[in-house]
Image 1: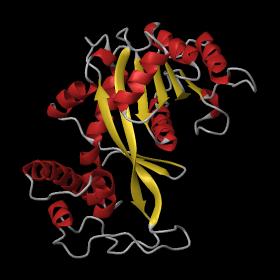
Image 2 (image 1 turned 180 degrees about the vertical axis):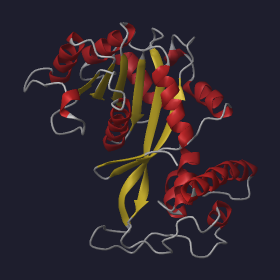
Image 3 (image 1 turned 135 degrees about the horizontal axis):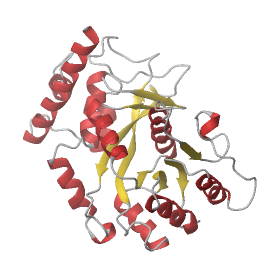
Length: 303
């Protein structure tokens, strides 16, 4: 079914194919991987999940650079952060002295501290895997902002992948309307509205305001081709399109999987993507892929 991680009000549920994509990036030559999205909670949750996965290998040396009380990880991985000055930059310098295999950097504000971006990229060139949460919205905008604020930071070929995140409303489990069996209906029926008994947003309760209790993070994991040496000069849309055509799992794919699992409702999906045309060929094709994943999940759970 894939793994699950909870960080505050954010839940991470990844499909097995997404986990494999992250594993391939992690096992590629060391480099820089950016986590980009509007939501700081989603960015942090993804980085926490990555630390949890990497820490299963006791031979991997991990250094986490984050402001105090903002990141959940074992204390042995957390780098001491000074109380004043360029705190994260100082923490990164301290971490490099320990020669870690992987560095997790929770917040990069390129326009505020370009030196941090530059040193993180240098660390990737020197042989560390650097996983950095980059403040910003859309990937193209964030990448251009990073490039403008810190020239040369991502034009060197050190970039290995980009993890894009955005928030999907999460149904409150206490007041959700509909059956508790979250996979009693087909995804096709949920999209067309023809299936009765689908889970829908509740009216609100003591745990939530309007039937929404936190959110799930939608994730796109886009590997960067090894020959890419000047990403801002190459259309991000082209890289993402090629990745999708090769079978990459898009935001919408991930959202429909959450819909089929009962974690959100159609209203929540359409809030992000607009009206879903269940009769379009693109949605029919995507729905079949998602339904196959849901069916496989049901079989795995039964066994």
